[in-house]
Amino acid sequence: MAVAGPVPAELQARAVFLNFPYDRQFMPRVALELPGGERRLDRIVELILGCRYSFHDLSRVELDLRRPQTPRMNMPFERGLTVMASYRNPKQHTWCVFEKDYKRVSKSLGDLASSDVYSHGGRPTGVLREIANALVAEDRQLEMRQLLAIYRDVKTVLPSILRKRGAKSCYEAAVFRDLVFSAQDAGKTRLGIGRA
Amino acid sequence: MPKRQATLPKRQPIVVKGDFLPNAELAQMLGISPRRAKELERMMDEIHRQERLRLATKQAARKGRNGRSRASAR
Image 1 (tube, helix red, strand yellow):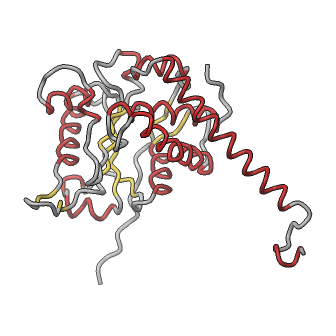
Image 2 (tube, helix red, strand yellow):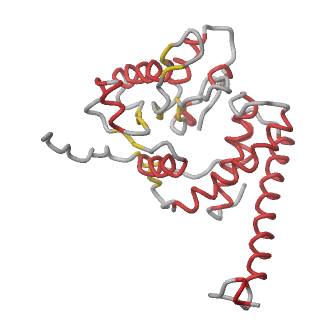
Image 3 (cartoon, each protein chain N blue to C red):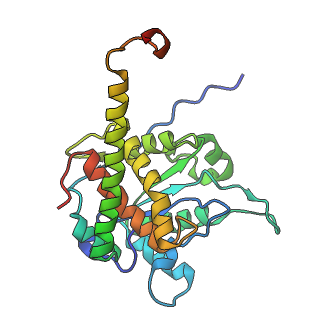
């Protein structure tokens, strides 16, 4: 779960920094949720340090064809920041790397060649499968049909959330918060857990 | 011929403990007002209600022609 603002200790254990790609039509806003006027980089570092885990999807590290044509470097850069944070506090931060095809990592980021990469094939089912490989619940095992049902619920509710918020992108701060809430709510229903 | 690479070993999964946060607590943590949280719950309830309705309609339509196509059921 992505958490905005300074994270209380009891919630830090649940917090996950999501370093995911944003498509060209979207503007990344999640890091902008943090209060205060510090530089964007400071806010990102604060967000990473406030999370016990981080998931990094490098599948969209590619050339951005808009002028000036440049590679998209934010995701590997934030990944590097996280690696440094985990070196300094190995028991306080755990990271996972996701890619469309694990062979891409050995080519684009050779330093990670010996790391385990969760390869999702660029499809929602692959992403859910690999997240299920990376995370194991102590008291329950999630089935793929349950994960897909939650994914469908969130996808279905998204247009209503966007309309209500007058937003164009799911990466706007308020929309993202609504989605986090709705995903957990859907999860509870699909797993037969009460809301309270 | 290049040597075939071994399948990548997967690191030990992260074991997640604890339960879901209550919705009210999650809403507070995310900065969502109680009113908005109720609205989001209603939206999700509506999605699930429509799904149940769709499944019930589908099951009713299939009743009596299990294992047969629509054409052969006529």
